Length: 246
Image (cartoon, rainbow, N blue to C red):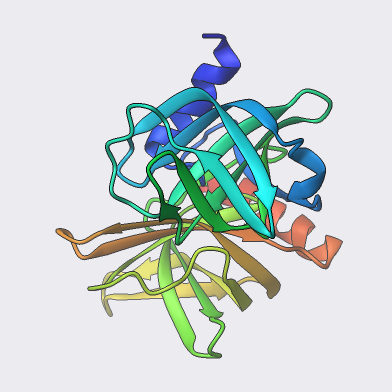
């Protein structure tokens, strides 16, 4: 197996929607109809179940009557109806997409045609760990105001975490009115911290979701959807300044 294929599998085993820490790649939504990529023929597919089980085989991938059809791997042992499919289009590169609510037949899966397709891109900006000094305030799709700790951040996105008893946000859902709050100073006499609020990021999309039921902890990867070059430049200043202070 070549290095690129190994990279895809290792990423998928951890979580296909990538990648906390200082990983070199991130998922990017591509504006392509899946019908343009699927040629109704056998493909070398990598299927990754939610429990981390990986299947790699040459399987048929097709669209029939607006339903996606995928051959079931010969050694299939998973009961989940959701998984992720990686494949390669020789003319365009490697892609992957989520499958939900798949119906399992003896030799094939049938599922709604995915509306979102991803490719892996090399990160264009540095990602830093925040050591607990940053938090975020944002509105979810129901217009509720939320806050969470930021684990790491870059100009392109962030990983947040919060204590909770259930997975609160849906994959691919949008958040908006995002403010970054940073501890700037601590007063031991009053046991208070000064904070600075950084400029508004208008929108973001949840591209990774991990829920640990035993620890009552949820983590979400957020991809920023920048509409302002000024905000990107300001985030760069924030990240560079935070790094110098560590």
